[in-house]
Amino acid sequence: MRKGNTASDANEANGTCAPGKVGANMADAAVSSGAANVTSSADAEGPSSPTGASVPGNIARAYEALDSFWREQNQLYRDVATSFGISESAFDILYAIYLAGEKGIAQRDICVQMCIGKQTVNSSIHKLEREGVVVLESGPGRRGLLAHLTPVGLELAERTIVPMIEAELAALREFDDRELELALLLGRRYTDALRSHFANIPGVLLTSQSGKAALLDGEAALRGVKAAAQGDASAPRNDGAAKRGGEGEGAPPGGCLSSPNKKVR
Image (cartoon, rainbow, N blue to C red; front, side, top):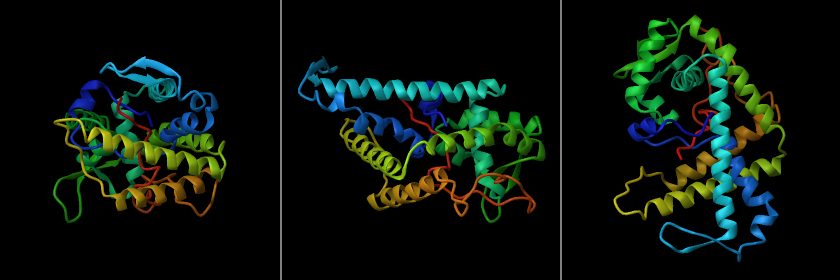
């Protein structure tokens, strides 16, 4: 899904954003692997950074291009939500609950997966509950309530969320195995580089993620995206994931299809 929220949501969010799906990495790959003109001008001098240091021309153009890609993707997802007459936060929450399947999902997990502030999630969840879209139920063997879709909510998700997922997968099918693998590899490298340099900012505390966990996440994402993009019938599917009472199969946990494209900028 989209790669960011409102500034208030981003500032309020209690947790870290889950890694974006491979769609979020396609922009990284486009600049890093496909823009020959960018890399060929590495020695060209570009604009100065806020510190006054000169930024190489290829870095400046890549920065601007990635920012433009992210903004354009944000607007695409915003347009989808608006077209269905659904607020952005409600659309994100509906997406998260749908993919959670029969097991449901806690509000704090929605906050982390969707990069939405807990107050926004809480108010949106209760509004959806009043509208008969969502029901909150006690989870087995755990504290707190888990959000599930009602039959009305499932019907809404099948009219809105499912077509969007199908469109996302259709977009991924535009790429071959090599391109998908490269996109994921570069996306992982870029995320790791951001983490490393953000960690050097005085006063900044980052949620830790072990290298092993990151590697496993990347490998799982690659397998899942390649299978889904190729239309592999044996790959985990999300359709009907939120059906309850034995009506459908649960959605696969985590992985590249567990949350919409999202990047706070």
